[in-house]
Image 1 (cartoon, rainbow, N blue to C red):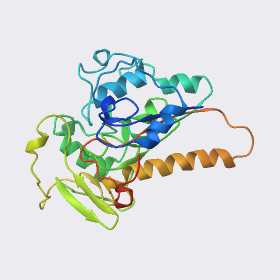
Image 2 (image 1 turned 90 degrees about the vertical axis):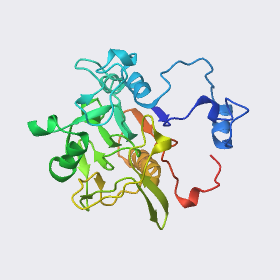
Image 3 (image 1 turned 30 degrees about the vertical axis):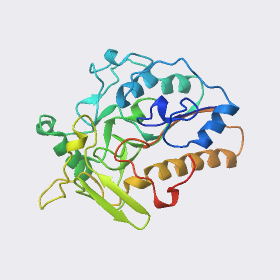
Image 4 (image 1 turned 180 degrees about the vertical axis):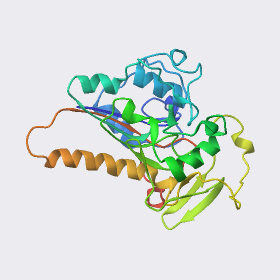
Length: 272
């Protein structure tokens, strides 16, 4: 079995196992490092989407659809036709394949009307959530048998889970805007927290007539809790299954620690 845990925007200097100057104690990760193998000579494009594309495809980012990688739902994922993913290779070798969490290399809305292909991404997200509810270029097309994923993580719309290619919207969708939201389990923040200009981000709550940008029951601070529960559920189903099971390849991609990450209140001051 192969399990990859992929953190979002975590730097090598953020972990005590790699840096004595790390600002946040990470004893659990240090214990995992001490019990296994710690790699000290690794090379990657040091930001989100390019590194995900390289992990999935084995290519430098400039060998994909765009030189600096693909983001959101703007004309397809970073993967070009014919580029084989690591999931497809494992599946061809008889492995069950699973993606949980942030997909993060772009995608495309299924059956999008032609006039919306020339419109803004906000308009495409609104149509996806209200009408289409399906992806045409996502984990299901990248070699994953099962997936519970977010197109852009917690930092950009659509704020919704996708089971395979289908949006999970049991309570419909709504507009969240750029705002802070208080819940009984903690606070979370919605808005486009990507690229430059984060210091100048302005809160812009939704107004009448604004398009939908997420699921009505979305809670950004609970994203990683849902990912963890889905992973444990996958392992439990395999344990309970009758008869031999094929080996698995699982890519579990967290929302932490990309802005605007806020953990549930119950994890405040917890060891990492």
